[in-house]
Image (cartoon, rainbow, N blue to C red; front, side, top):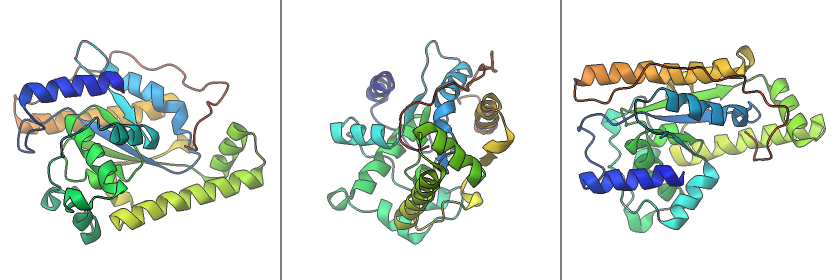
Amino acid sequence: MERYLRKRATADAAVGGNGDLDDAPPPPSLTISRQCGVGLSRIERPLLEYLDSLESGPSPSWALFDQSILGRVVDDGRLPKSAPPFLSERTKFPVTSALRDRLALPQKDWTLFNHSANAIRQICRAGQALVVGRAGNFVTSDFGNTFHVRLIADKSNRIAFVSKRYRIDARDASELVEETDKARARFVKRHAGAEIDDAVAYHLVVNMDHFDDDVTVRVIADSMHEWAEARVRSSGPEGVSWQAPSRRPGNVIEGDFPASPPQ
């Protein structure tokens, strides 16, 4: 994250700001929404590594921003500029008037959601950002460079995953899965006026029960890569370019699950 923010700050200073949405297309960004217990934590690092392998730059560039990291970025004031205004006429899918009104609030009236949304929009506008949750797909739905993914899995499998990861019994795991899913749905409903499970709000919905983790990584990254390539081709030769995948990530399933919030 620190390397990413330093690099973006240098680039922003060089061009004098975030630019306009009509400029040459920036590198792609990716948002991921997920049900609790799908196992996103298993694929986060391999996904970043694989995304880096698709880039033509000299050094790794992709960075992950989840709730805790976004909170640190906002609290530290690392993104002082405001993102480009939300343009509802450019959204990829229908958005509610509630979301439009929220994102149009003057800065003096911003809530914590507005500060988070502003950070997400700046990060995704810059490119090569992987944003997890926080209604990222909705608040960046007008960005042509941002690809949206939803991860799902059978509830019984998610309960089993959470039970094993946190060493709790199935009943407690079931309650954790249900309450986390409900909390995430309430967050999206409250702030975006939308349904988190609405498939129309995503470019890609992946059922993780049907893929090994390394395949899931390639499905997500390669789908975004092909989508971004098509976007650049339609924008003309001044757009950014990427190298074809040069390697595949290995088996990303680890023996132990890391201690972190439910995924």
